[in-house]
Length: 402
Ligand code: C5P
Image (cartoon, rainbow, N blue to C red):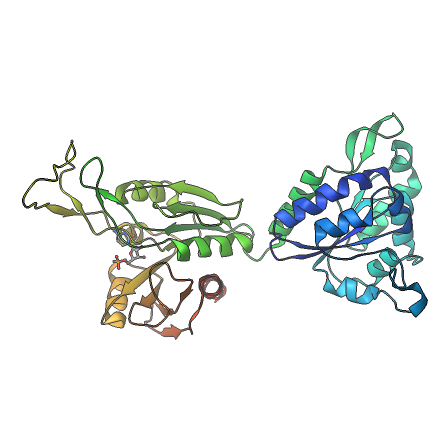
């Protein structure tokens, strides 16, 4: 949920500021871009250089340029705020929260806050009595009424030695709070997607198999795109090389077509959308040799029998799911794809043809045509697999909203 997001981190002057380098690292690890704005008092607790090195961006705390105070250059709080997709103020002291609630603007962080139109999260950090004081409680209430989101303080040992509420939420908990909150507001929140990806391997003997060249890249890209939009995603993957996968995705690893069938079937009834991207072998050896077949054998015939057609089975069992298949063709692409759409009772089929430039096993790009139930064609230009994944999901969302 945080990958690619622009996060403006506001650091105020409380002891919990010493945890902000860890927070910046965690946000960066999630793929976010981070910029830091500090209050002057925060400089007493954490060095801006530390935050600058970790965020890989300059850190600001004054209205005028810190490097050239005599030149009258200013740090543009409006630019800082408009750059942000999300403004996170952590730690947020009682003083800063009271100023935010009252509209005060006597430092750069507060000016950025007043200029921001993105979601604002604040993680209070203060001593127990300050936290419980009606003035502070009314700041919390006021800020929530403004639409700001509080990441509640945790209960525990405080800098004063007292024990109670007031500890800034731990950096890990702040990150998971953000992820959960963003997911709950995402376009695919509450939707369940199941995606198959990669090849299947059908055993010939204990060391050999029938396989294919599928890399799994397209299926993984779809899984990541769906998860990025907030869907609950299960990815059933055949044997593929390592690909990046968002941490919220439940991955089930399978080898053979029948293992993939079992995994998909187990979860099918709960799904809203099922996208079958895997290149499932159509045939498997009728018998798997118990021992390794000797290499000295002069010639060898292997009798094959059909594998289970997962897509066709799901098409028959379909209740409310949107079922999407893929067709990778080498010739007469449209006719083959249309006939699979009907035969397997799919709602959509995504056609890619090896005759097109930029379409190949393991390629970073793909060129697709989506065919709907009425056999209307929706062609797309050559794009990265991540963009193709997004196009497919946008098409499905439009279909669901139609
Ligand atoms: O292999 P074929 O071109 O028929 O694949 C069309 C669609 O059916 C693809 O979405 C593929 O994932 C699916 N399929 C399947 N089980 C098979 C064969 C294909 O789910 N045994």
